[in-house]
Image (cartoon, rainbow, N blue to C red; front, top):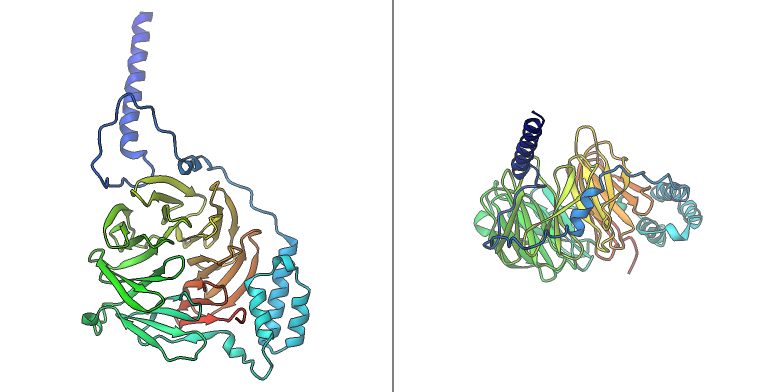
Length: 430
């Protein structure tokens, strides 16, 4: 009887193990299965199990991380910046200068330089309204703005078939490039989003028709185009080296392409409310948001390469710093409107920034990586110190902000909103 019981227990154990293996084979793989780019071969039974990649090891970092304590020095610096900013707008130049002089030199960044640059102008040349400069596109509404490689011009995606080019200094007339002449008068055809290479040498525009256009960012000439499908493209990213493009189509696939339009892989399914996509600083990985964690994929093959982040519900904005140190996400859920900052190397969460009152639509790092810009539906553009997580500067635009960016030289900040495209600068005179 004892032997029979042991045999029954062993059989039950084997049955449970077998059932578990079947369940996990269908549901326990992280992320969405990726179609193979090249034919696969059967695994050699003598092969040893492969070691997890560094990114996969980051999946183990699920325990909550203690956030940094409030930094008194940065809090004082931010208060001084706000005071100087208010004085500048009120025309109290001496007071603004005196306040700036009290700030800690080690904490100064773009916002300090911007105010100092403005104070360097004579009182007769100073016009408070010019602090926020509205940039009108050639025609139509604005969906996104991107500052060009020379840091003196901005590309504006209006809701037409035209990509507008604006001189930030106001010294030249508006230029434009018609991406698709056949749809120039088609109200349903327009540019939905913009992206650029790390040096802004190439600007990529995506449309409601699923088309992708690559434009020379310096000569403002159309270089090439390809069709990503027949659905509107809601999100777009270009690798810093310009070799890859990632597209997110409404209620369709997220696809990784080579710059010439050759498909590398389908990375997953898009969602009705969109999914953000961004490339790592070295162009080796592409990240896909939308849920609590960021799915990472190898750009060379499209293969899954683990996950990053966590504790960030509905990551609807995503960015990697150009120095490779940070990853930022922004939430747009009903219960969370926070910006999250992560260490790119370890995957640990460094800061939760809960300054916005509505959802986050865009996050972007300054060229030096010291500031994180967040654009929100609450109508504010906020700058956060990446080292401390402390708020540094806020610009209230009055309308929901859809995108925001720095110029390559850090002298301008631009954003798109329901009012159109706007910019402040120059932060520092050349």
